[in-house]
Length: 244
Image 1: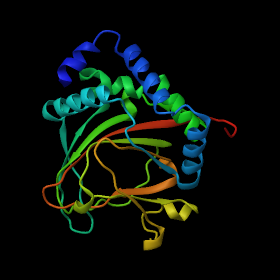
Image 2: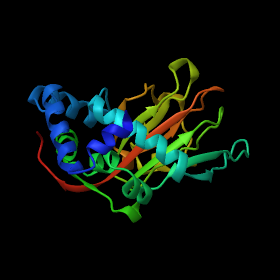
Image 3: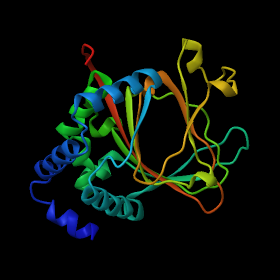
Image 4: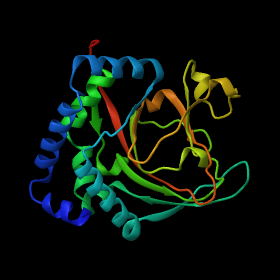
């Protein structure tokens, strides 16, 4: 099914994705003033907003097929050492260069004008995609149980994280983040109290938007047998706009 969808989109893919997204956002009322105001206020307050059922089913199906194909044939294993255990689990990643050269739907989504317009309304900033050499899109597959990520702050202004596969809630694997209140909050050596940490659990197909350069972030470990596959789309900051 995914192959058929991708083949259908092969000619004029960007235009077809634009058309599908525009119709879908309209159907889901993601272009209504009330809905946008709600998303805007939540994002301004929390630096985070979850967008459930964010992508039309036909694009979800096609992108899942592309993700599987990319991970099977074009991923590289990255060793990430856990400072607390000295373990170095292997994490499978696919680079933006391979995503752009070997898939259709995922890069079309990343460069979608309709998507960028929605993100502009939520963030009150123009969001700008990165070129291939700056890591704008990546796919990551983690199936190592009990691996605990270290806190990190990324340089990208915004991250849109799309769960192709997510652990069940009872399997762990929550996304954790801390809003910056001072510059010290972004120091890895800063003492972090439990009440600073925001935790969010996600299902497969969920998408969240994070103000990444204003947060510390990590994924909590999950149980044996679970896995996480995410497509991460990074965006730079454009000019600041007035309030919606």
